[in-house]
Amino acid sequence: MLSSRHSGAEEKKSKTRTLSLELYEPHSAQLEMHESPARFRVGAFGRQSGKSTWAINELCKAAWENPNTVHWFVSPTFDQAKIQYRRLVGMLWPCREIFLKKNQSELRIKFINQSEIIFKSGEVGENLRGSTLNSVIIDEVRDQPPDLWSMIISPMTTTTKGRDSFISTPNGFDAFYDLA
Image 1 (cartoon, rainbow, N blue to C red):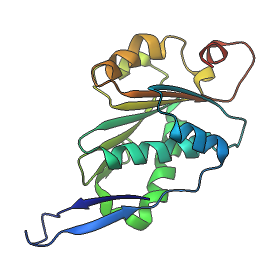
Image 2 (cartoon, helix red, strand yellow; image 1 turned 90 degrees about the vertical axis):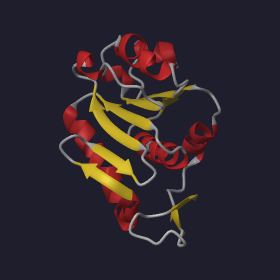
Image 3 (cartoon, one colour; image 1 turned 45 degrees about the vertical axis):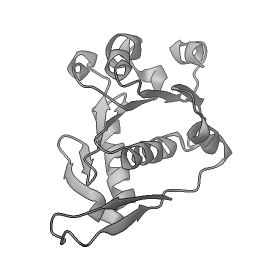
């Protein structure tokens, strides 16, 4: 469970309320990834084993516990990014008061603590340049352009010493195999 204290603008200054965000119950492989203190994490998960569920919960936790931060989930395609965005919105809908803004066309959620989670596609890496990130999760690394992290995303997390996570289903001896 994550909790944080926030004062809403509509509330009187003397009132402060506590909001709690309860996430999922991870299985052992997901828990191992959540508990890893490493800055760079690699998770080789089988099909339908919960890698995307791990990822959106990990991003929620990071955004909720660290105000004023920016977190990305990078899918291989825009359609896959939309699916994950919708999963996150659906997961958080029961506690939607934690949303400050949500923008479906930009696949962006901003929490009341000013942190953002943004869903991106790695299809055109050049379109990703320019942001400063506090964490990034690259989904299905095996289906992403080989230079996506090293040439484009890594510099965006370097200044913040952000956490970079790589998750994928293994597919032989490829770039993901080299990371793992």
